[in-house]
Length: 185
Image 1: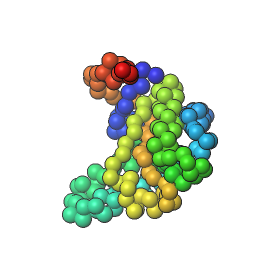
Image 2 (image 1 turned 90 degrees about the horizontal axis):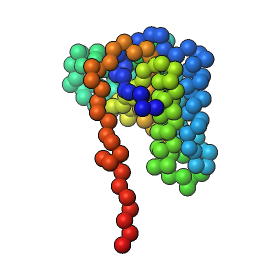
Image 3 (image 1 turned 180 degrees about the horizontal axis):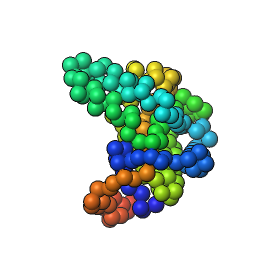
Image 4 (image 1 turned 120 degrees about the horizontal axis):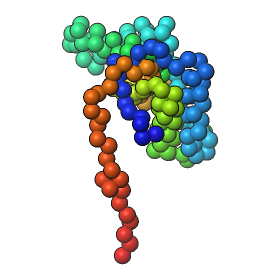
């Protein structure tokens, strides 16, 4: 678990996970804590045949929020759809199952499902990254993925073979930096 590192999608190449490995990776998501068993998350695979449509959507999303964006910026946005061999959208659902299970619990469950995916991908020898951005909230992306009213695009997961890493990995915090003890007087 401690060897997992974010590898930027531009540093991931083919091959990505094969069908059996991808199944193993996705099955791991179901081990996430899930109060009420509402499964507030789902994953949408983006196959090679859909990358051009996603690229167009990324460009359109940029123009939706910045009509003055130049052609070079649109191309940069579009290029992101083609970076990793395995790409999936993470969707969190706010309106499924028990309505008393609030959004923070649903987000935590989704985050745990995503972390399980990242950890199994790492164990299988693949690099991974989460990417987000303003395009996730765009009308054109919601339309492309057919997101319903209670669904939110949370991030993309990229998986693939690591081509290069940063020379020095970022320093991880130590528990003393983020753990305290409740003191009752």
